[in-house]
Length: 264
Image 1: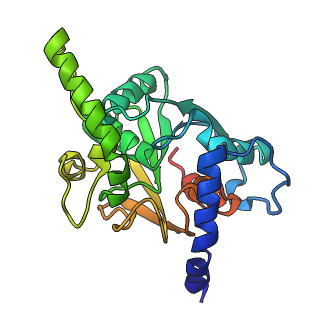
Image 2: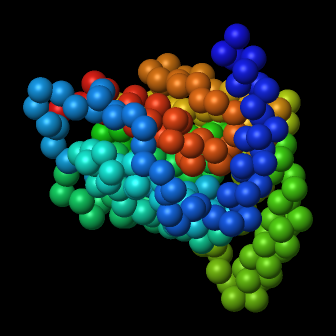
């Protein structure tokens, strides 16, 4: 019954997503949390963990603002830090930039990525270097591609053409063509760029992986956001793509799984 009630909430979740895309995350929370996240506290308070947040396609660095509010109000042992990348650029370039940021820390860090950001953190850990990473969280991420990316493909074509011209005129042969929209596109197994096929073929390193996916995701379609890979902990969320990082209920569920059985 609960599953059907969630499905009935999809129109509302879609309306919330449109609102958040148009206005950005809310600057002020109108109410405090009604529940205390008791699972976050044990007999001994764990050491503070650095959690680097990577936003999604078309979002800004403050996309995880509500995560920050929850963490602050509940005094959780988490230091949330932002990572931003240039809109529409090749996911591999964004991952390389993230990898450089990770190396700035003297101790292991954790990563969380929403939507495209989930692919950025995955590539940084699976394809570049996992040495200084302990936990990776992906939220509403198109692990198997999304046909909705086709809506942004005209922008991708313009961008690829401009990059090709730069190669010819300026001789920038090291500049890799591609854009995030093109790399995320997938429909019934067809992924023209090949990026996702390569990423999904990589082995899972000795890192804890948590994947939180909405039961209905209007921007990850027709494939599910569930990540079928050995060792990955999948968590089902309520409907809504952006709602996954805006709803207090979903944020609690994600953080609960994150702080549960934390590696020492």
